[in-house]
Image (tube, rainbow, N blue to C red; front, side, top):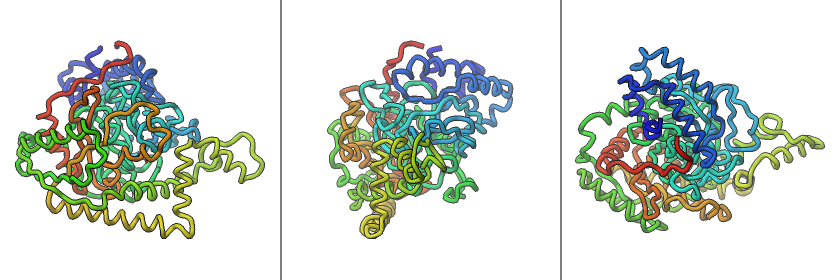
Length: 493
Ligand code: GLN
């Protein structure tokens, strides 16, 4: 049974086609891996073995439909801020501990319609706020490369469960780096699509102008397959794009994918401050590798990227303070058992239900939006956001992709940064500007550091040009060669 642990989406699809194994065997193997490893890694919250096995059996009865189902029999985990009817959706918060989803989010619905099997919900930072997955009310997610280290956040459970071999693919959300940063720290591929590419219907909102859903996989192809399934217009999300969704995997199967001769990659030296020396070395080696594949490297200027951290924490906190107003113990969420009057009901329910980081953001956002400060903070932040977008527009006149490290360091120790929010926020310096500009970006593993921890390379694309960064990443991945699998810490399957 051990073999399935290393199987990616593509391996499974090919194996099913060759009739080498059946969905119920794969589900059973995933469940075995979860049983052995999840108590140590804490990646997954609700797990539904019986439902997954029943669904696998149902798919086995429809084996003749296999060619029409692009994710036939692929077990997946969904970040616990994505709704699936009848499942709990906690968003990593005590305030939603007992919330049962009344409907299914569009991205989850599309995965299921494509033949995927939802096996579990993945642990995450509370309301997707965090960079280490230490802000979950249900405990931190441990990194399968070293259980004493963080998995990255906020989609740490989604990234770690793919890295640990619990599932071959998963979904997360990315508001300022929460797909790419944990993908980098856990050594898997993660894509944040262009804002509007994937519907946000049925996804618990953090900062609505920045949030995007995206996939994790063990290879670029695997992530591309999931992305093409979940992308596309949805009448239930007014911000979803009507643009045509390319068949990303078809383009990757083309043999011309290996050459980067017509590609110019932008680099922005001024953005490279505060970088760990081993991450820097890995980044430079990746650039040489891209050049060896035929890519040209061109310097670009992103003069306002340095303001992204301040801009992001004003805009994201402002939007969050408004989006989280609904959790008051009446409309949504846990209600305090005893309160005298409405005001106390609100304040006690929220005070007891929300964790420290969420409270901090609500206070910050409420302050930035309050009369007297609105122009100085919120309006100003939006003006600078526009300048950051403009920097990228100008840079993309010279190149098709910009390459930067995904995170300034590899996985840090649990507890190392939790007492110092500013240091923690710096984990996202390379990812935040991309959400502010609404661009697509992915993280692809670029090797291991001297502590045997994964490093990630981030490729940023033009709006709706996920195809280009997938192409570059696939060529890079092929020339990089296979990486070792995360050391198994959960016993044997
Ligand atoms: N780490 C950032 C934050 O804490 C980004 C989170 C995210 O992308 N959801 O807000």
